[in-house]
Image (cartoon, rainbow over the protein chains, first blue to last red):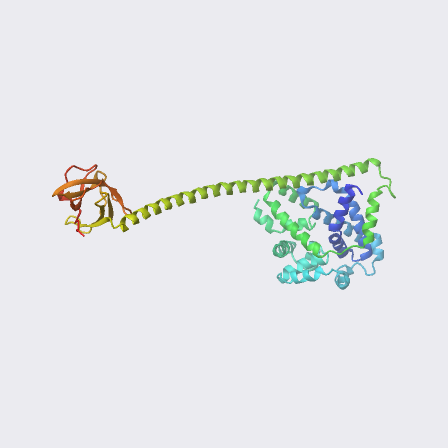
Length: 166
Length: 265
């Protein structure tokens, strides 16, 4: 293997799990999520030269590629064909699906962590990180001003900073 | 722009979470360049974001990894990829690796330089401290030597102690003379005497055969014995007067501060 491929393997081993988590929580189908993950890594391989560290961490850049690729997938024909419930079921589907999304062992520690947050902050974190909601979706679905969603997210992230990053 | 309010709005979180429109993203990126203090905040948010997502990782099937590695090794499978593109990609990775290595190296250089400078500063401090301790030790040692000598004199039975009590002019004054009649040595110890002006000095006198003999001038010095001029045998009284600096040949009796008789024993 060349050095590039080693670098690629390193990126994959370090981040594939986190990226697949993001994708699964959006597309809700494990098999399809693994396909999206492959597309995502091919895109990363192809576009690594356009990554600009002035604009943020490599991880953030990769997650954004994964999220966009996953959202694109949910809009594809293949996805709607595969989907058993209709459009109105979008959110319901997600909530119903909670039970069968495997969050992994670490996620148990995570839910303990989230319980340390005030309820309204826990709510936005869960909706975004665990259910794959965008901030606009949270705002529309739960009738919260977008600005409120943003500031609650900020407060939650600040608390989590102290709890998570050490 | 009010940076605090900007950060508090949660726009950086939304940026990291990919929740902004293209126009909003461009604005944040401009601000990151313009206000460097936003960078550290962004980094902290990104670290939290990454830690959260790593906690929620779902491991892919091993076959996915294998498929991908095969695919990137043969970039032409299934698609027509110009040969050049591989080279371009390679250079990109090499460039990325080079930048990374340069960053790591410069971080180490920076870090070591900092540590080296710190060590140098500490060393300078330690040398200064050491010097201080050595000086203090020398001072203490000298004092100790002097005290030992003083104690030897005080304990030596060949020295006779003469207590000089305050006169009417200075009732609270008190001093002692240690006189060795055989060696003629005289030491003075001041217990209590007043401070003199700069133009005056104390002068010690010995009365021998009824006549005052100069035994040396001295300044107010407490806590140790003062070596005075030798006094030959036959002195019956010691006394201290205040005289102009340098002393006089005959005492000014009006300024007598302390006096005491030698007690034969």
